[in-house]
Amino acid sequence: MNEEPDDIDEAAARWHAAQHDDAMDWDGFTRWLEEDPRHRTAYDAIALLDARIDAALPILRRPQSVEIQSARPRWRRSARWATAGSAVAAAAVAGLFFLSNGSTPPLTVYRTAQGQGRDVQLADGSSAAMAPGSVLRIPAKTGDPIAMEGNATFDIRHDPTRSVEIRAGGYAIRDIGTRFDVSTSGGMLRVAVTQGRVAVRSLTAGGEVEVSAGNVLTAVDPQSAPTLAPLGARPSSGWRNGRMTYDDVPLGLVVADIARFTGSPVTIDPAIAKRRFSGVLATGSGDAMTNALAELANLRKRTERDAIRLDGGAGR
Image (tube, rainbow, N blue to C red; front, side, top):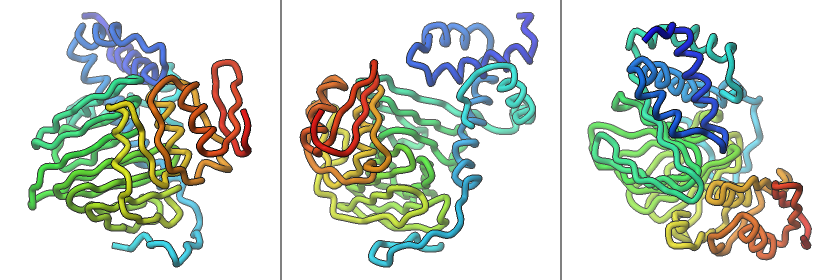
């Protein structure tokens, strides 16, 4: 083909940015990838840079020291690609020139649409069950961190010679062989361990908290101390059987689940996003699920055009 490298890089950047749009042309994207091997190489380079930006943002935004309440377990010491265009392509070419020579392995990116999950098999025999509206970025090089957004249940094959690290928001979850569920949104994190043990580290606070089987860690932001509690409810993979069960989960994570599952633009007032919720929601439309949540959690629901907003105070 007669495409110039710069044209390919720009197209790759545009396709990557378009994946954040509900109107993404997945068939067109697949055809573009298959037209020329260089397309796949360029796209993988863009995806890798995006993952590296994700991992670096919490460090770049490192705040000043924060007081941590002693009653909680302490972290023990041990501009995304939002728009496409020539500026994005230029940054990709400048920042990833060395990738064109194959010096850094590419990523495999998995995305799930609303209402659809996906089971992903990893090269080492481990697996991940992705919830709707989630993203996994799997590096080709064994030992490099896996990046995720949304919700997934991991079943990691035990191997005493290595550990698996998963980056989710401003956190890293390290595991040597276990089963656990991770849910993240807006700086919040929930890790529920059903088998084995994991260590969760804040990329900002720079410490670790161990979570053993039968326990759940909840963090409302990477700077604040997390909470540990017994795992009263099963992890939130209940979307598979039509019921989402929550036990002392921040409302921000509940609303993120609803938005991912239904594809509806649902938001919550940040002032109440950290408030905890316990209850069961039947899966359905965004309107039906937010009606149920508003009723159970004593929230007020407002609808503006197609967007749903939840805030404090009863009544809809």
